[in-house]
Image (cartoon, rainbow, N blue to C red; front, side):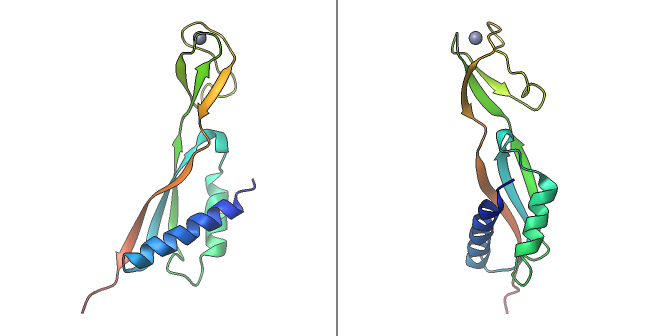
Length: 121
Ligand SMILES: [Zn+2]
């Protein structure tokens, strides 16, 4: 996994967003990740716990949401999903052809953060 730089850049946007929203603490960070990325949730959380202490994101929980990948059949062009079940052996549901082109599956994006706001006086 060579994802530490990615985690760091997500971390930066989380801090920017949270501060912009007047957060006192970040509680949860939701990241969508394509299954082809092969992210390991435990590792992501470990990296996060390594870089976030001392910031408002310290102690926050990373929630990874996996996105299925999609492919287009190399013979008939049918688009179909690649999931955890068929990722090792993708096959066109229409014609049975086993080769094709990947359309998506390596996305990685920050989709939401949950914060605790500063109390207004
Ligand atoms: Zn096909």
